[in-house]
Image (cartoon, rainbow, N blue to C red; front, side, top):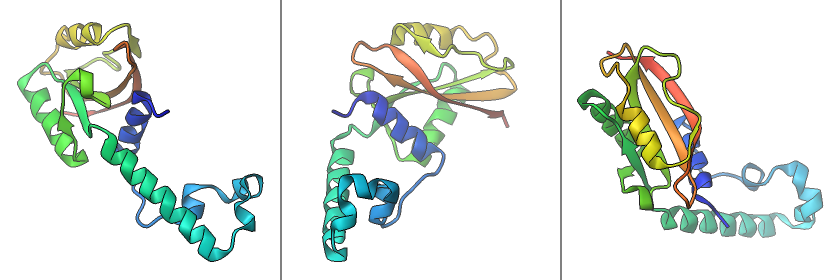
Length: 163
């Protein structure tokens, strides 16, 4: 079963620019695994059919996702930056209930202003809202995965200078 945390990992991969254009079967399943899975015994046309079936499955999975992220951005500048990031990723903003991940943008002069994990989305929201330096010199962009109980765990953190 695919979980919300896998959606967060996929979001992170997309955020760093990993995109597959017409992947080969070797891109989908490493050739080192072909012997144990029996793929090496398939003819080239059979491998093409398998690749096509895997791609159809992946497209269906992708379409089944809400294709959206929940956003926490406590100030005007962080909201604008979050909107810019969502647009670049092609993600829409959705409620926490339907989100595949949580995108958090804060400004701070601290090295790592938010914790790695929280017992609830509400705790994360409160911590982001309580950042004292909303005009800090750096943007901090976090992606958190979320389990079914709305506990969140950091998947990625990037920081960069505010313009």
